[in-house]
Length: 264
Image (cartoon, rainbow, N blue to C red; front, side, top):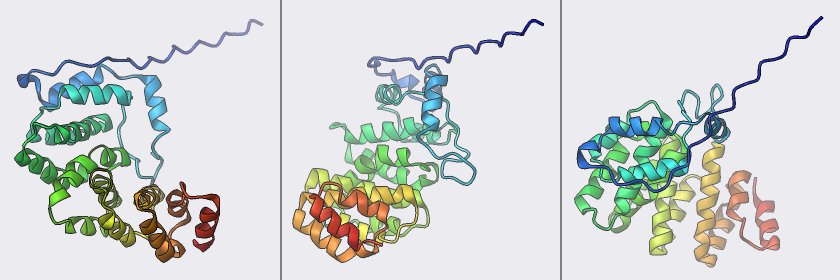
């Protein structure tokens, strides 16, 4: 009896690679046009990779998010080409059900906020938009793309009470924003005070993906080693082990062992 041969699966569509893109004409700076361009870079191969980055199972944080499969380098290049997009169009882009479109919106916001020619008024618009539409910033990468340049930079010379409010939010992504905004103060201003206060408010964090960010920010306090050690002496016993492990990552083996033994 002849054995039927199994049909070969068609090879996955490879992820298109892209060089730097030309800036888009003003009339083309729309959310609709961005999404049209974005879809031309869709890749089944990249989609499989992306699904490994996010917990998208039932009940997990990325459940229900729609991914199409676009390489991050390509996404950033496309965002750079659209960097002059208005806040109104950025908000439309944030409304998309396509995750990469929302990532594009956050990348545009972050890149635009960092441009030397961006006015203080526009930076305020971006800051206000970020906080007002945090309902559309619902994954770790979306926070990470814009919290530091959009929120942290804006607050650099202003009161920072909003970060304490975000740190105590029931929304896990608002809590992550509080952490990542503090990176601006550490990296650009060499200040750790606000980072320490925000981290202290989140010592009991339950979410694994936020615990890692918490530990990472505590580790960044290490730009001032005495302050890092003082923070760990006070809080290590109450920190989740995931966060503590990230926090002590760059310490000596003896110091790591000491603080890990203090943890819960």
